[in-house]
Each structure stands twice: as C-alpha cells, then as structure tokens.
Amino acid sequence: MTTPRLLLLIFLVILSAAFVIFLYRFIRDPSLISLLLAMISPLLIAAILDTSEPISETLDSFLNRGKKLSSCTIYLYGMAGSGKTSLMKSWLQADQKPEKSTEVFDYYPHQVLDSVEQQKYIKINIADYQGQKQSGIINNEKLRLANAILFVVDVVPRYDESYNLLDTSNKQIEWLSHSTAKKIHQRVDDHRIYIMGSLEPLFDRLFNKHLYSIRLVINKYDLIEKLGKKGLLPDLDSDADSNQIQKYAIGLFKDIETEIRRACQVNQIQDFSVSLISTSTDLNVRNLLRGIIKTYKNKQN
Ligand SMILES: Nc1nc2c(ncn2[C@@H]2O[C@H](COP(=O)(O)OP(=O)(O)OP(=O)(O)O)[C@@H](O)[C@H]2O)c(=O)[nH]1
Ligand SMILES: [Mg+2]
Image (tube, rainbow, N blue to C red; front, side):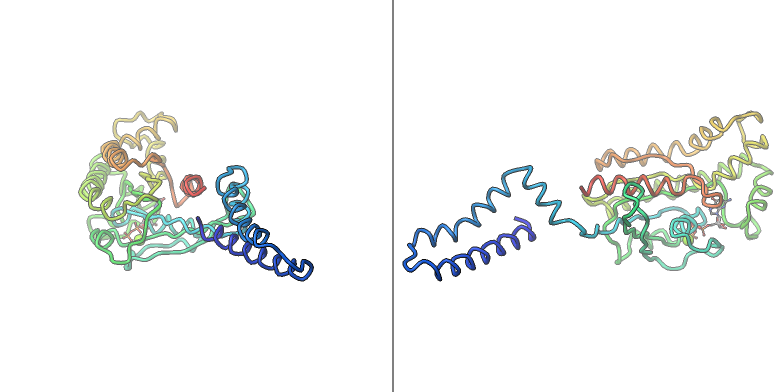
C-alpha cells in the first residue's frame, strides 16, 4: 500500500473512531458488534479501493493531483567542442557564447513548459562536462540516475591545426572549404574512437531502469547544409537537395549509430533515434527536448 493510501486509511480509522464516540452520546448500551463494525469498515473500504481498478485509478489521480513530477535528468556526452554546452544553453535559453571549453562537471536544473499540457512545467536536469576529460564523467562521484543520454557529434573541431579558434560559422566554413573530405572524415573518426571506446563503461555507470531515451545528436548541421549547397561535400552532387544532404549527414555517422543501437538493444532501451540539429540556427533543438520529455512522461505515468 502506498503512503497516500495508508494516510487515507488512517484518516478513515480516525473518522470512524470519531463516529463511534459520537454514537456513544446517543446510544446508552452500544453493543460490541456495532463497535467492531465501525472499526472494521475503514479496512473494508480500503480493500475495495485497492482491488477495484476504476476506483483505484480515480483515487490515484486524486491523490497525485498537483504533485510535482520529479526531474528528468539528461546527460550530454561527446568530444570537446561538439556543442554540448551550446545545446544546454539553447534549452535553458541562456546567453549563447560558449567559446571556452567547459571546466567542471555539473548539473543545470531548469523548468520547461510541457508541450502537451501547456500550463504545466516540467523540471529537467542537464549534466554537462568537459569533453576532453572523458573519464571525468564516467568516474564522477556525483553521477545521478540518467533518464536520457545524448551522444553529441559534429563535423568541425573548436580549433584549427594552428590552434586558431573556429568560433564563427564563416571561419568554420572557410576552414572546411579546403580538403573538406579529409577534415570531415578525420573529425568523424575521432568521434567514433571517442564514443565506441567508452560505450560499455558509460552504459555500465549510467544504466538504470529509468534510462528511457538515447539519442545520437548530429550537431552543427547548418555547416553541413551550407557545404552541401556550395557543392563542397565529398561524394555528393552540387545540386543535391535537402533530403540528400540530410541522408549524407546521417550516413557519415552510420558506424556510431549502429554501435549505439546495439548497446540500446542489449540494455532493452527502445527509444533510440538520430537527430540532426544546429544550436546556432536553433534547428530541431526544441524538438529534441520535446521527444525526450514525451518519453519520460509516458514512462512515468
Ligand atoms: N556552426 C555551428 N557552430 C556551433 C554549433 N554549436 C556549437 N558551435 C560552436 O562549437 C564550439 C564548441 O561548442 P561548445 O558548446 O562549447 O562545445 P562543448 O561540447 O561544450 O565542448 P567542451 O566543453 O570542450 O566539451 C563553439 O565555438 C560553438 O560556438 C552549431 O550548431 N553550429
Ligand atoms: Mg562545454
């Protein structure tokens, strides 16, 4: 029996006792049977409430009315510069200028409007860390139960070979415009090594029965699209349409997708998909969060 039900039962017992005391004032010789009946009746009511499904459901929804949902904890995982902090800031609608690498592993609590029930808010908790310190997340003492893990990948690093910041879209496109295939494949390869090497320890540490959603998040899609429109993407015609460019982007990370999908199957996590996003242009950023919250809510109900 749940705590609210137990409280309800105690309340009924007290109510019956009060009723019996009330009866004593009017009946001179109350029989023991009537006394027992009065005491047993709340137990009978409680048993009926527990076994009758429609009543039980109504009672639950009444007892849970106004009760706050616990927060949905989302882990952002990926190489340095892939855009974890940018994604977190987009969701939190914070100032968007994360030029520096994150230095601490921390949780960022926030409330977002529930897309289904517009009047209600849902609490989210986003875990962000410095991608360079991969072991920092896996060995962290502060780890909480994860409801979702997002693997964030991209096609351009934070710095070029001479350690110049590639912090604007123009600089990134300019840098990628030469030896495009080599640079993109190098970055994709780095992501593959980073993610595949840590999939098992990561799932070992973060897996729990409330881990509902996994995403492979391909960030900086704005760059892929621009390169595609300029005809700079290797193996893709210069007149490729949006559909073909999207397929190309997803194709780049096929190996990583396959490995994560396999890990999801092993751990019996059904909600896995690939998202193309851009935190710079806000492409699919909200949709991504909406999907995670939707699954979280469905599982909680
Ligand atoms: N063009 C483009 N650049 C982006 C996008 N998202 C992030 N960036 C840039 O990528 C760089 C790295 O972003 P961060 O969010 O700091 O990356 P991070 O994953 O938190 O990196 P670490 O903290 O080092 O692990 C920054 O210069 C961002 O401006 C995007 O959607 N498009
Ligand atoms: Mg960061």
